[in-house]
Image (tube, rainbow, N blue to C red; front, side, top):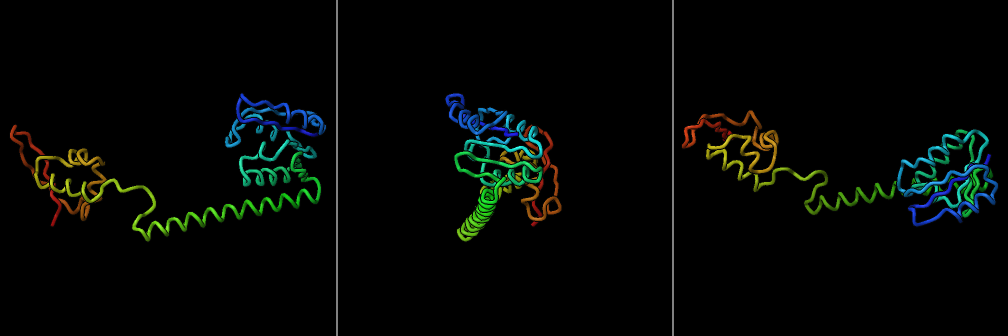
Length: 207
């Protein structure tokens, strides 16, 4: 059975051109979808793949109508091949039921792998360049040197608890402890008072 798939990105477009081509190709059933090609959760495409059986052929007007990316397209073609289902694109004249069609898809698969490796290498090169300029990847530090100095000053003042100091510098108390030399083990706790007589916890970094 020939199973067609037609997709447009939004409601301002129509499926007429694709539908005409799929009907002319002999598709007995056509799955019609309006959704962005970047979406992974395309309902009609999922229904098509679930419906297809061994010996069927999935037909699309153009490959970018069915695949999100080159990688997604080659992975889908491989999954279909394992199930005994072929894939055909009318515009590109690619048909995986023929030797030449399978050859072209193998080339696409190789290009997809090369594309992934290039992205990985570019990412690594960018990180290396950033390190050379003193910039590190990952999440930014919650406490920079200025905030840490403010926290240490407030600790020496003795009128603020660690929770209050953490709120002042915009971090969690656990982050503040980790940023101090020796963490919790590197601080000593003392009891102090403020003018209204309320007891406070004074924690000072061990010198």
